[in-house]
Length: 181
Length: 181
Image (tube, rainbow over all chains, first blue to last red; front, side):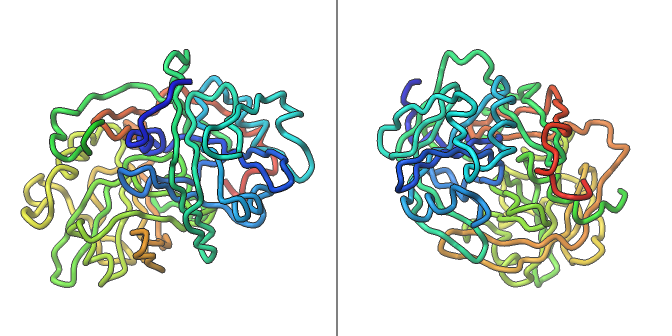
């Protein structure tokens, strides 16, 4: 993976992809869960991630204040389903699904091998009343030679769509785009 | 448009589509802006919408605590661009772009004609420190016979993608799906 300029990291989340969030608890144990409940807050690498105490990684998020937002392209749909249909309370998902836990550069949570992109994040706020964690990206990585770059989107009923037709409308958006993208 | 069961409304937002948010200020003036900074909070019709005082509709959101989340399919990309590249401070977008302002059932903000789906929402909380509005859907509508149902996703640099290949993975997700979808 190649380092991605941090000011471009929002472009990985703005399209609304299925992500896999990885954490590493104080006990050193890594976990990963599938999540689509995430949005950019603006054009900075700040994100709102929605999850609560029912999630095994919740404790790690609260205690270590770190995670990695892994963006899986369509080629990883089987992994997204594997990781999304069991709990770290019962299984070591990295072991069970033979996932590679790549070292991140600034957080202790691992990057999930095989993903198209990843954003290392720190938790900068926790709005417990609404189960929202505010994340700040501190490093971003992208696999520029990744074969399948189609993002996946979850409908919520077990259906997923992959990116199809692309429309280039840069010229029409002019000064409504942030600088440097 | 046909009424959509409220417990299914999250399925319109979970895929991360480009939306158009419509409001009606206390002065009776309707406005609409393009937004992709929105996520579901969980499987209920609760959403986190991110915007701040730079947005002309901000005042209406704060004062009336109402809006409509309009989901435009790919056929409305020109409207998404029109609405996203000017401000309600300077123009009446409904007039300028000949948009139909359909009456909503439970909020004073209008539904934008031509959209594939719409969720009428009330603002139930405002986390001003992070520019997050918490919305609660109170009615939802869908155009079941809409021709182009591909959702649009914004990359953030003027590029948009429409939904392409579909994967049906319901059987593999089992009890990880919410009831009734």
